[in-house]
Length: 67
Image 1 (spheres, helix red, strand yellow):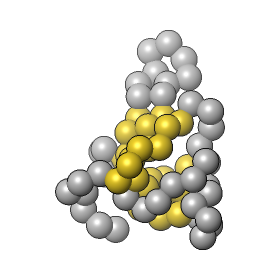
Image 2 (cartoon, one colour; image 1 turned 60 degrees about the vertical axis):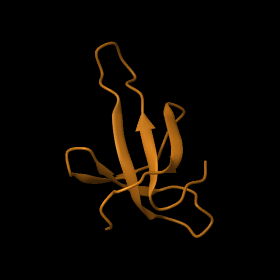
Image 3 (cartoon, rainbow, N blue to C red; image 1 turned 135 degrees about the vertical axis):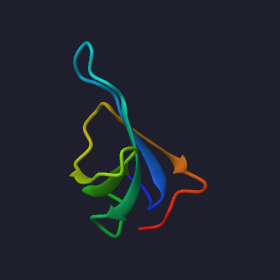
């Protein structure tokens, strides 16, 4: 998996009732775009993410505030 700063990441819930999580990648762990990623979630929290098979990366979002 490869991503760029500003790309959207979507994590699907793993269990029935788990919510989908959507965030923006604000930092990349390696120069080649591979994880880990620092993600700013819709609620403003930031976490370090090592995406699993339930993750999708989308193109950069427009209008997101910079890190």
